[in-house]
Length: 400
Ligand SMILES: Cc1cc2nc3c(=O)[nH]c(=O)nc-3n(C[C@H](O)[C@H](O)[C@H](O)COP(=O)(O)OP(=O)(O)OC[C@H]3O[C@@H](n4cnc5c(N)ncnc54)[C@H](O)[C@@H]3O)c2cc1C
Image 1 (cartoon, rainbow, N blue to C red):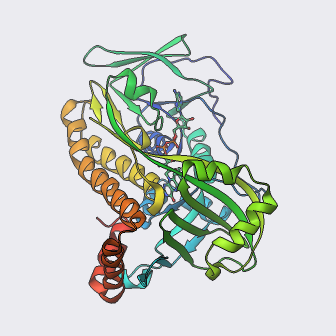
Image 2: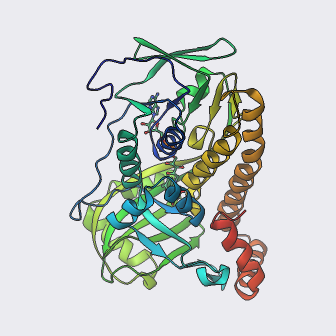
């Protein structure tokens, strides 16, 4: 295993690419670029999770990975390890409206796929990507580190790390999440909107073992989602107004368990215990530009969306795939032409996905009888018309 900056002083300061942020998206782009043979510096300010053992409690944060994201992780050579550590495939996805008859189930077989996706813990994805990074000689990891200053001279980005070392590369990639330091440092503004909604996330033990289906029931307070995990485990996501979520979060496990048993759909079977829980405010954000001089944004640093359809990290992986496509034939990695091409490839898809999530969020909250009627007609139409179901399934699985 090669040393990283935790163990040894930095011997080189000139790189092909500097990546700030080693979450799922930043780690994947660093690994992909390092595997091509480029010299990469990866900067991360938080401890890296360890790959869980069978008895390790489930991470609260999980993601529904689309087939397209899984194909990308396969290309990186990490999917096999993720899959066999622990993951839950789902072949069906049921969505219904509490206040009407609209009820639709999507099947992987409808679009000729073995699965619609897999539910995997975020920390597991990150841990496996990092293990591969540490085994890749072309990537230098600067852990427990953060950038303190940035400037560009037109042909290179210069990044000062921890106020001590200045790293230089023709391209700086900001993959440092929703509150991106890079986005602010390079002067990219963003638009955002708050939904006054939070996602209460609960890792629970269920009466039945894992099934190959995800459930999502829309209520006027927000969706209630059930995502299967390995064995008798599941992840519940309960969206509601932020105050209501905070109030529920303050309750004891026993009180919350009774509430879940009463208010979550009976289809799930019994919930016998809560393992871990937390809540996350939901915010939509879109960077006004994805690129600046010698810099580019990917993943949550460029856009965040309502997670009700589980698309956030998938969009981040699609950003990485598009960026790699644009950089692969470029002699100059941070050339404005290649970066603008990347932005053109990704902005519309990210915007359409954000707006679709808004339509779900506001459309299902509405209590006006006409809107309730129309949305139930819509769900019934999707349920009854196979080509419509296929369009939605293809969109969710990343086949844009
Ligand atoms: C409740 C909820 C459920 C979700 N469910 C799904 C789902 O089912 N499917 C899905 O696709 N998406 C889902 N998402 C969205 C998904 O979690 C995010 O889109 C994804 O985590 C973004 O990954 P990222 O790597 O871009 O950013 P992050 O995960 O935020 O990673 C950023 C990294 O940068 C590091 N960093 C930040 N600042 C600095 C700095 N200054 N210096 C160095 N390092 C820094 C951080 O420590 C972190 O490691 C969900 C989100 C929520 C809130």
